Length: 169
Image (cartoon, rainbow, N blue to C red; front, top):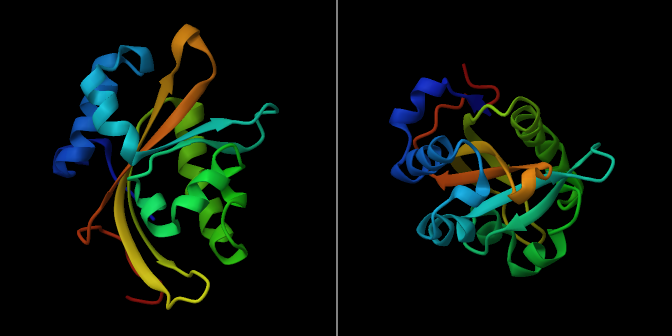
């Protein structure tokens, strides 16, 4: 996982730049997103909210066209919405999920967007492990009525990520 400078948003993919512009234009108010923005973004994003005790991050939305849905499948999506995010993976992946949640928590607390490059080896039952590389923009939004915030993860799969592989110098 590599965290990028906020100024690097200009080098991000069109999808990530558009997501950032939407967040900036709405000042993080979900109800100020245009209908077209919702239609374009919701199928592809993950949305996280704190649990009732505000101790864990839970999936509140997983778009069916999101990278996670494509990797883990439709049943995983249905099983994971409402679950603590790092518990919806198998044990091996939960270590990675814990690392991923640090960025989400940081955005939840600070309200500042976070652009990251991520490369991970995905292991699934009965399949050979495979690499997934992507850029991820985390933005915090407030829902209608000023309710507790959510963090939206907009993810763009790409091989163009600046992440040093473990053990490579």
